Image 1 (tube, rainbow, N blue to C red):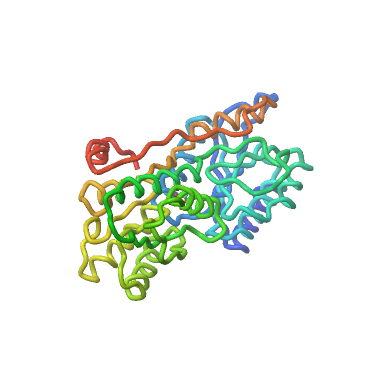
Image 2 (image 1 turned 135 degrees about the vertical axis):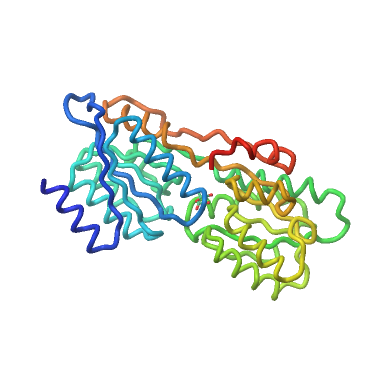
Length: 323
Ligand code: AHR
């Protein structure tokens, strides 16, 4: 009784959306349903919406009671939510960290309370790996590398410089740091490929459009846009068209995610290549929640299986695309 009231009060006061679901899966330690506290980054992109839906639906079908909190892109909201989950004595805590750094204190609090933590989608840069049980998600460095390798091949016949502008994800986030690194590593030895401008577009369409407008004004020649997600690429496409240029032709575009709108733009020839980042983590997460709450050992790292799409592959995949 105290737990629910406290949570509702905390959510109201701090602007954190906290939804309580119900379910009936027996806690294998003996007794009530397994309660999972999940702190989500926010609702910045199509990818995030699909990820939230996958987690909510999977919790329901696994009979896990989900306490879902939307951090609205703020680390302090995630820390507040995790502390609220500890107060409520949830069985397991899972979260997708908005940024990589600054988690040790709250993770130590969860450990002291005996509540196992699962990282999903994004990891933390903590050196103490005992603070969480496992990390389920993509290899973001590999994603950036695939985007860079595509560009190296695509530029093989180019005789002059290939000028690239980069729309980075949210500053300090694992996908922004890692996709930048992977791409830079892949193009590293190809001196004609030059990243002439790189700025955050915060993983949103609106910011992607705004930053691309600025790039188009400040750069005399842009050959390629590398966007760390589809939403920023879609915003940038609007800016490119408004500037009288043809996305996919005058400016080549490579992005990451492969959400439906991105895949449609790829099929339409406005994007040239997309590296997939799979948001459907819910079923695997619920499986892990059951295992860790039963005290079973789980692998320290579980990597998501992903592919890449060119225009033909996108056209073939679109009719079955779930998100
Ligand atoms: O952490 C995954 C990234 O976060 C997705 O690529 C992006 O769209 C989202 O906002």
